[in-house]
Image (cartoon, rainbow, N blue to C red; front, side):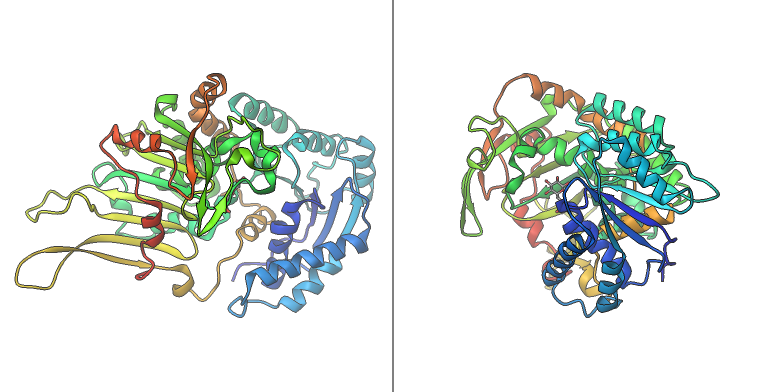
Length: 500
Ligand code: BG6
């Protein structure tokens, strides 16, 4: 059982926004239900909207009920939901706050005083990141006196390219110490993502094959069936590459590919991640494909084209799909292609890492069309699936395909959490292991900067793909150059359904 987190105030900038409702408040609730919050914990909502304690509390109460309804059966959860409601709702306090007004910071600083630990959670649009950290600094709110902590949690997107990320890092680190900055990539809070490290570094069987001698290629897929939903105007300036690749997908890639750290402390692990990210060869437009969803059908329902979505330009050039062929310049991975792809409105909702193993070239002939696979599922349904060759029963030695694996939901009693619990808990505990350091962020942007430059200036339209498909045909050509093929998204979805 984890220790109770240190007592602190959780000050949420953007208290009225979606993130607070759908992810942050449920995470606080789960931590409370699990008995991981100190009774002295305070939760303060800060936003420009007119609310008072009662109306914010009511909104959060509704949000938590909606969350519990969506969760369904929580009987396997270790904890007490009734007590958690009282715990959380009793601690909520709302403060109307203008993020750009120094007076508001000054009066909040007066109220808080010097004492006490505070986590400032920036659940706000990126344009406020700098203003809020500067406001906190000017009001002295970031001073850590007498062993107390003052920490700032920053959501993504962190910059929109290398230059803007560097400028934001420079600004933030001039106002706060790196040890106070917790840059979120919510994928790092997912059970299965942390599970990759457990798999690699706590088993004798797996880590020895994570290298060029045994792995022929790696495919990282984050396929979604949802479209751009209500985020049209935000997504138009973003696109699939910026939204998913230099953050979430590179986080997965890093965990699979980094060298083994000497310890599992934050510094050693983040050093190993930075070294890997810096070893990625800058990715040019020849190694990247962009797509945009056209109309189609998903699970029997008609889906409109991206250009027909709300608040999207009819001639939009924004990509909703991106695929990249990535090379890593080090001894472990030289000549092993890492293919990453992500898209909206694809055929199935699947997030996986598939490692294709090399043919052992032994005395028994194998089927080159069905190589051995190690599949790491980044959702609680699939944990790990291994596809391998096995002898079919019979008088002759004929090979068949076998699968073995495990599922989180059937193997362990504890249900997975939403991910933000782990992240918030680690912020309070002062463990930066699961957060992005400035050098990691900059190395991620540096790797994709050549593609961003090319796509930003060529004025070309992304390749269309039908909603409900696996992406544009050009993505197949990207792999065909190396004699490789994408695993079908439906296959990835199916693998392990029966065995794991
Ligand atoms: C977010 C992206 O960071 O991650 C979204 O902005 C995407 O576009 C989401 O849908 C995917 O996260 P998850 O946890 O739902 O797989």
